[in-house]
Amino acid sequence: MQLVIGNKNYSSWSMRPWVLMRGLDIPFEERKLSFTLGLGTGFREAVRAVSPAGRVPVLLDGDLAVWDSLAIAEYLHERFPDLGVWPAARAARAHARSLAAEMHAGFGALRQHCPMNIEASLPEAGARVLREQPAVQRDLERIAEIFGAAQGPFLFGEFGAVDAFYAPVALRLRSYALPVPPAAAAYAERLLAARGPAEWIADALEEHEWVAEDEPYRTRR
Image 1: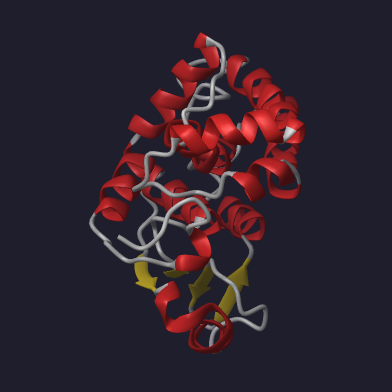
Image 2: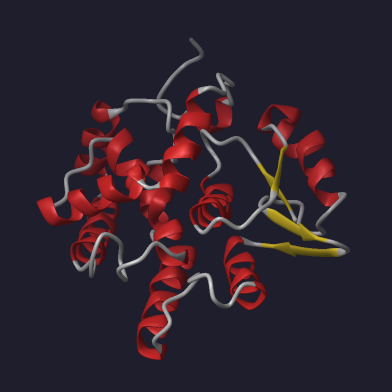
């Protein structure tokens, strides 16, 4: 299998299936398409060669292309049913899927005002966002509720898809110094220290690529 992704420093959507597959030891080949190709031109043309949506991530398995991070998670569950993509118990599985779908479709204010930027340290921007954007504070309160209810090291005990979906949020908490209660902060740090997220972070810090569209709070260094 091959996973087509964007820049690791910025692409939260790409991060989810990558850390899931790495964390569950699902073998794959990484193919990274840099956003520096140009989000409106070369980048989308390159992605459209493998997916009609023109967006990353895309999972290629033989002649099959699966795009969208949630669809990829479901495909991996079907392809590897015994690896723990979702919890084994039906009720827990439904709950985990609900939380992943909530992340997939929600938290728009947090996404907009605190875009993922692993390499950056932006506490002043985070404080300003919380002062000026009440919707971000509401998103943060819901995140704290979810993270604080973790049922073990991860949300449902063992690392799985729902944790992978919230890994970019944990990175936002770190980059923007967004405050959450101790239990939620502890889960976020455990998640970022797990194998998949830790490896993604290390790779992101080695990229050294500047994408102006993903840098609302900084100018080019």
